[in-house]
Length: 345
Image (tube, rainbow, N blue to C red):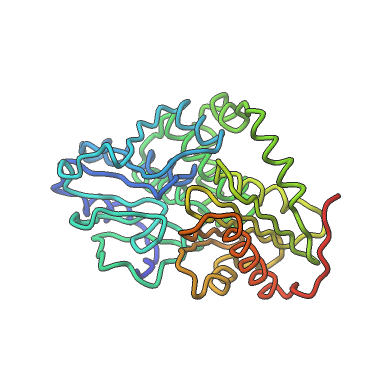
């Protein structure tokens, strides 16, 4: 899918692509994160406010992370699992924070895609989908920033709930404007911070956590190995795949570490997260080299990336083989294969 170069008035093209529709499904990627959820929430508001078209928020998978669950609950996002949707009731689809052809996105094959709004590097193939409107900006840190720009261009006042969702999406994908940040991300952040519900934002950012959460991290710390400037860790079997990304973010704060790779197996899928702290770190490029020949899918943006690999045999022996193979590949590409492994304790 070709990446559109932004120009003023892009929002008008987006709305024009939806003209004549009666009911639109706004779809996130599977297991949606705050940027995907906030982007969907903001676009639904925009569509209903300007066109009066009824919309629904569809998603597949699960939401595990405590902050994300609090976001859904506190903001009343009205998300509907795809298995509960009658796709025949919709005559159009908007895809947010993902694109056709990504492995973590499943689209109804017999429905037209009206629009794609995203900031990730496009997949090589898009499975024959030809959206009427495409706005993919890989230089922007968050899809929520693009959606905010649409609202700003039309002069629409953003209500607190929508502003909070969009702002939290930007905060999480750019680590509070500290990574992969563009001028638009900064402008959107400033615009939204004046309109967001700060008490709700604080509640979402610091939810209560169960004891099992800390037990998982204690186990993970024992499994961390450092190879030169790279830290790697596999959680093995995990009940919460979101912990893979959380652990990756935490380990990146370790002194002297420039790359972090974490992984974990959940319900037949091995999830991988990658983070870079070094200047010019390209997570997508790293994953493209490591994932060559694998059956799974991957994506990334700047210093952040992730992948998933379907696993037919989830026995302990098979899991160990996957872990060894992938971690050796990462270390090879990073030039740390010959480095001695050290544990944290």
